[in-house]
Image (tube, rainbow, N blue to C red):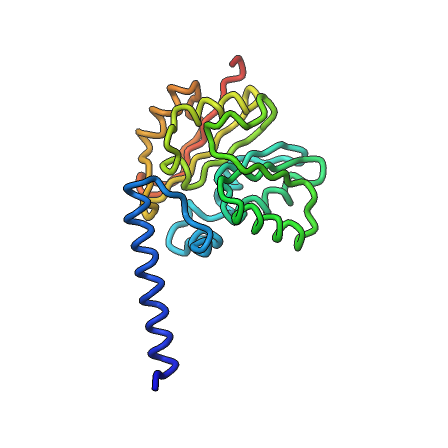
Length: 214
């Protein structure tokens, strides 16, 4: 008869196998984190400070009434606290290609009584973002999952108001990790300029500004 300990160990082993399988497949095919593995991105990583929700929000200087794009929002780890921070006069657009992720964000928004979140099922670079309306945009461990990163960054550039900020967070644990040099090159080609860097080369948030005269 299987004991509870053996069952527990077996479930842990199965979970690790599934995670490793996803990491291997995602490196080859640029796969986003699937909905059934959302728990990997639903909570703060205890091993990195830069990637924590509070740190990311602190670095983008949110103000009540702002309009925010959370691109590749996943299960809403940042969407919900950002919506609370910008308040009822502000708005967050949760963008994800997976309907299951958006449903999860909707559940959290309803539980938190937040009515200032819009939902958009789309991938970055599909020309579905409204132009010139956002104060901030976020890509948290998402950039490397986008097949056409240059087109996506140009679309985000056009979606921001002049002076708006794109916040890109990358962590080495992510199979799609993009280094600072790569992010700056891609963002520079889209028209962004560096506004702030937080962390180190293995775990960082890079803020990129759309020039005020753009």
